[in-house]
Length: 169
Length: 307
Image (cartoon, rainbow over all chains, first blue to last red; front, top):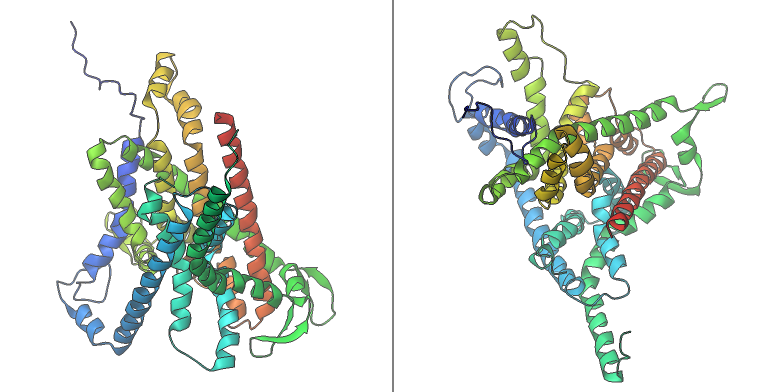
């Protein structure tokens, strides 16, 4: 018997695939990790480390614009995700685990539509419509932002919904 | 032959369909108000006259569409192709295709790697792919910008190792845009690819090797045809947002290397030509629809060939 030094043959392995995959994971995370580490940098550079400090977190915390923008983001996100989850759950009840009916495909197409249209196109279309409405009723609240985000979130909610995702549909 | 339904059953079915439609109605109304409806309004706007300070005059005009493709000289009125617009169309399509190819080159081995892990650790690797996906696009784009800047991590590393003397200009080039888009849309390639690789029957691959196929031949003749639906789905999911991208080209491409998204944005800002912007958006939508048609055809041909 001669002992073999080469690796055992595996039907699952393809040469170079594992190393490419690991490289891919490293590339996905490196920029984010660098950004996180240097957010604690005492200096203002992202290449030169000048020691650990909370300086930039203090600056962000005390910045009025950061504060108000955060509040708007949280408000819009909380409302839009709540409404979208409710509406998508209802739609999931109406479109999955049911006998196929006329108009089902049309409903899917309509709900899917924001995923198919590039964001910039949806954005300018909404700009056009909301500009007209805003001029007419002179209201400048968050409702337009909430409405737009709700619509955009519905397809994501529907396709991640347990009722749909488990594949009984 | 289905048996004919009794009157009672028929009524029950009609009732069920009615309930189903009613349940979907609220979602459809919101989507009509904030997604489909505005697209129709935008189509109308593309045929109006631009206002002096943005907005529109309510007067029909085909000027917006004319300007998408042609340029009229303001002095002698000669008409020529709008080279600036057409080259931006071309750059957008070219960069989106390159991004899709780069995503396949990186994403295919990665999806295969995850799909061949033991069942217990697969979810962990998938989770690693989804975290960057849920990280804000803007943050990831700025992260890439910091890495490839002249004083950024890559150049600092290369210079301190003595490989180069002067920093390589990567930021504000087409390469930077492509790199950035590949980085942000890569998970969209990996996830559908993984979904179809997960179902791979390795007995078929083994059979291929038993018949003395080389690894490359097994990859080309066995694996690729089986994962084609995932590959096509991933390509579409990367291609469409790349085509309409405007954050990434603006940050990584600087002001000069515009893509379609930036050109559209410009018309609603400094350009003050809303009808032209609307027409450009509809044109972008048409390219996307063409890509989707190819996708649907592909799905139909693969599903019919396996039946």
